[in-house]
Image (tube, rainbow, N blue to C red; front, side, top):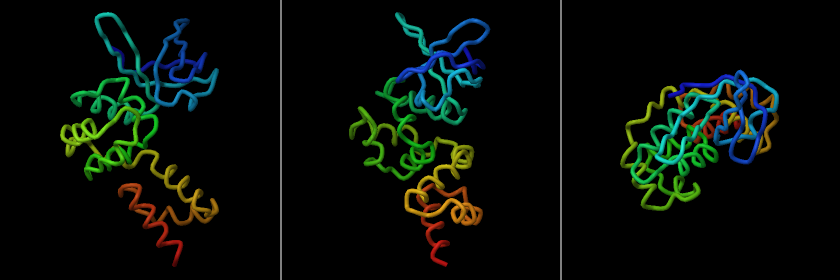
Amino acid sequence: MYGYIRGIVKEIESNYIILDNNGIGYLIYTPNPYSFNLEEEYTVYIYQSVKEDELTLYGFKLKEEKDLFLKLIEVKGLGCKMALPIIATGSINGIVDAIERENILYLKKFPKIGDKVARQIILDLKGKLNTSNVVSNNNNDELIEVLKGLGYKTNDILKVIKQVNNSLPLEEQIKEALKLFLK
């Protein structure tokens, strides 16, 4: 079992990277391969899936992504190949918030997730996710991107987000930031 592999990214494809570690190229399926840069060194947090006819590595830039992935694959009817696109297309905070608030519509936006699987995710994971670690990580980046998308200038955004409580879910942070802009 691997915890992480540190190496240099040698190849990037649509759903995986090849990470060179001491002359061995590990093919690692990852949620966002294009977030990596060629010829740069990374620590990739690894989950090793072993089946009777296949050995697969799944990798994540953040330990929090790996932790959420591990929780998702525990859900009945949800395997690695369904959990990976959830991590790829959703923010950690958004996914956790949707589970805690029982937001089935948010969960159904992910590929191959229907009503039944969305309800199963909520049933199996509500109240079991450690939100204290998740919420603080990379939340400002998401908030900044949302506010930029709304037309606010970067300098103004940076002044306002210092006053926003980053322990809140992203949606609440956005509301709080917008109120501060109106003052």
